[in-house]
Length: 173
Image 1: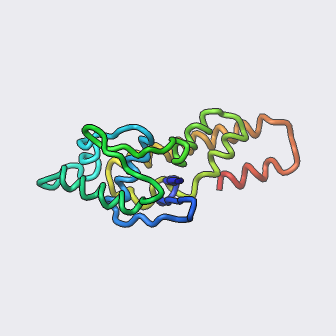
Image 2: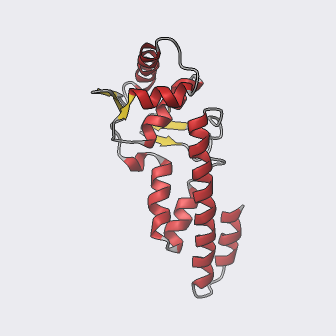
Image 3: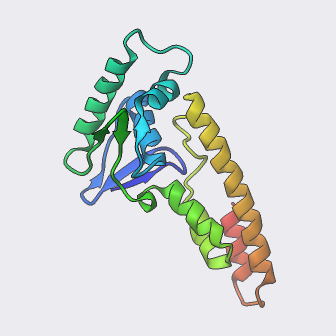
């Protein structure tokens, strides 16, 4: 399973794309994916999904969203209930944003180029209406700019080779 948020949300299984419908279900998936393999408390999910206006029975509303997400992801992926919350049992590298961060941290030209190639548009382009995800998207967009600048510096520091500056121009587009 691959979850891509560096652009609009995309979910792919070995069998192909997985359609995740409903903005709150999509937001729930992203919130769990950002913490890949780690539990997220129900309270934190409720706060992120409904901000200042949670439903009267927010815990039940969250359970309903989790049920819908489980049905969508089955049989490719599950959402585990853990004491006080939920967990998406995937490796961090299955989420493009986590892979981007790991690659960008290496700071060499090849890793930075691979990191920047993961982007398909503005982070979480279709989920920025969720305040918590808008903040995450802004932070990721900022990380992208830092990586782009580091990539430019790394490429310019390399010995000249035909076509290298063309690659730099293509990455910045």
